[in-house]
Image (tube, chains in turn purple, red):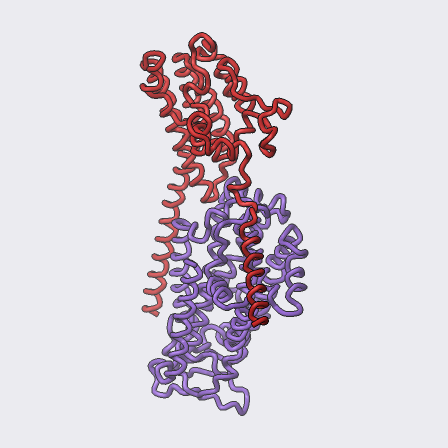
Length: 367
Length: 268
């Protein structure tokens, strides 16, 4: 015990970590009415960590060559010890990351936490969401299966509908006129280097903003639900009399993470194939188009939107307009009220938006 | 009046032109058919009967037409049946195995080695005795049946052969189904599929063997090999079962940890 105390002292006099822990853990107070939805950010951090870890392990055996990629993934699934588990965790994890990210964004929207002074929190989060979609799309091609090949063909084809630069953009993404070995090289580089770095950087920025500005209080269980930010000078939002981050809320984070892991492993062990149609296990064949090419579930709404408009360009423009509106929402919605029940127009748009998104997703699935 | 007449003539011309365009023989599947079919199909009796039978056959299904077997020129009606254009006509009974064997090489060999083949020309059956010349269907074990076999001999030995082969076929069908199912779930089935392919070929080569003992012996050997594939699939199944049990522990541990952490929070 004496040795431990001396080591602790050695570090304390050099780093002053007790003060650091007091400031950021035990003394860092959160609103008393904070709820479990606030722990989704921590869940997402864990998911990102699992993705990075399983991704690195997959890199040991994966061969990013169009002639060998499918074989290498098959070997990972069948020959590498626990390879199936690592790959399933990575593939299921990518889907779960999108799902949890959507829930995180919806809860932020519902509680009006995007409002001033947290515009940048929302914006970095929104960019993160798009980067996660990008990393999922680029990872989709890597197994070089029929599903990967044709889903990427359809996805990159949409870029061609953009006026003037569409053709150039499509060829830039594909590394040629058609999806082929150069596309795999590009998507591989983006998936394992470019996008993870960008995501890690933005997570850093997102957390810095959270720490610097302070955690927003949920608008529930309060008498005053209007945004109290004055906008005259920088103020860290403190919560005097609140609950400490450590151990209180960290235990809530841990509870949510464990519940997430239970759900995650239920899919991994019992129904991993909900994300894998038969074509995911057939090698890519550019000369054989599968009967029904559908994108991943999180792109089904976009896919269906492109189909219902008379031209692909119009469909892309509508999607672009919706995404731009969502990205700039904190700058557009300047109202002070945060409680959703006191914001009927917002609530109608929120519920309507979810219904439309779900409706388009289901329609896209069955169309 | 003249203007009306002019307009009327123009309309008449346009209609005639349209009719000419639509009435012109376009290349549709029906009209792409050979001259053999065009001449024989409308013929009554013996001339047209083979065409009707052929249309329902496995050959028609796979695009094998009259000239593929009988030779001749399928595009030139005047010389369609000219020997100079390779027309072979109808083969003699003794020449039928060689006639069919141009495509069905292995089967022809098997048949000629069998008691059926050795009896060719001495009252034994040729290919068309069992398979028909034109109403040829995809063969199943049902072709070995009392009605067909009893035309020449008793059914007893044929029934024994059929039973041995039925067991093999049941195994092959079951393993094939399992392989496709596992393949669709990411299991590497390549080696097993190649093994099954080779065994299925061995099984198919028994189709024209009529030596009961030989069929039984070879069937038992094939079945033993099939059992090995089945056992390897059973191992995959067992492994998946073990994974699910491990999964239950992992999920249970996560839920238990969630409960404990939740209770711990309540006590803080």
